[in-house]
Image (tube, rainbow, N blue to C red; front, side, top):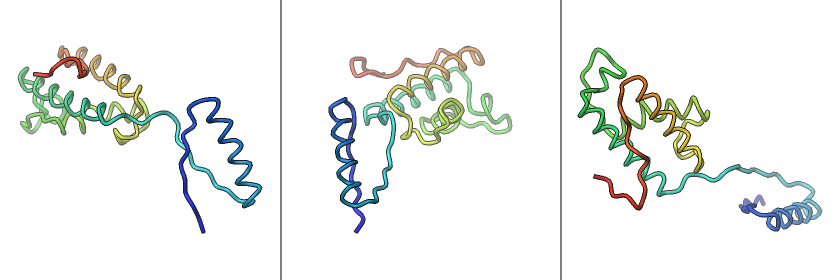
Length: 141
């Protein structure tokens, strides 16, 4: 019977425990398959911050007269929304920078990288100063 378990290795002690567990499992079963992930996935707080930031940027782009037509599709007047900012601005930058399609796949430090690149691009291309990244100690308008 196949059994799947997860163990977090985030210290030297946990690493040594994992090595011992691997040896024990191999001696016992003579066949063990491992799957792992690296880096820490974004937190729920970071996910909420991403959605808030996308909404704030959508409002800012709309207020400045940069609808989606002016930024992406010249033939149609389309106002920005939080989801459209995420899909048409955030995600393409994330994919190009990190080779990760889903925002859930980005780890904690990678959100900062995407935010910085996107802010720099919007500033250079449109003269827009994108919102700062939301923080718990600052209330969003």
